[in-house]
Length: 307
Image (cartoon, rainbow, N blue to C red; front, side, top):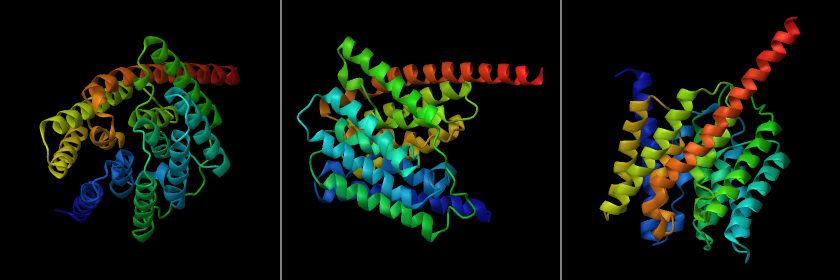
């Protein structure tokens, strides 16, 4: 085994152990709100894949998700409708990104999670603060961001399109009578990332739909079939690793999906794979349509400039 392969194995072990410790803490304190699906995605993306776009400004790994979690937690305590909470949090999270002049997709999930799971205990915030701080610390200690530029200009056009897509979807599910499908945190993160991709093709859209749906299936089936939480999560991580290897994909949200059944309202857990498929197909089809249109417009502008 060469040095790079050995380092990769160590990085995966560190990320998976970190995720298992988070679940172990939830078991010890008998508090499921400590389980944070997006933290699993961040652990792999930051420590293993070294996702450049997520650690150009390492301090924001702690600051931004913590702020959006505070926003989501606070809004969830208000006595307003579920859909109102979702819309308000979506808008406020984009405002927070604007104020900090930094964009971090996982922070969208940490802001929406307290609404989706109806988090009401301050242990949720404590878990966010502790885990994101540790993720940030790992990046600093091992210099994972070495050589990266801190420049990360906001792309307001994509932020606006992101919001509009969600408002359209929210309108559809409300009219259809399925408000619980208004938002699925891992999907919303990938949608934001997909809009920012310079090239987005049909193959990528299909791959994201397949991987996210199958990761939801894996997480839901294991959660409903087994009782041991640590065993479930260990199997989840192993199967998601195999799934991503099979599809030759790096989609951090795939590691978040299997943890959703632990924190989702029990009555909605069996519907999670179906919801993942429907929501993914809607969003990634529209993202593909927009990116195709954008590509065509750019080509026209280049042709006009050449003439």
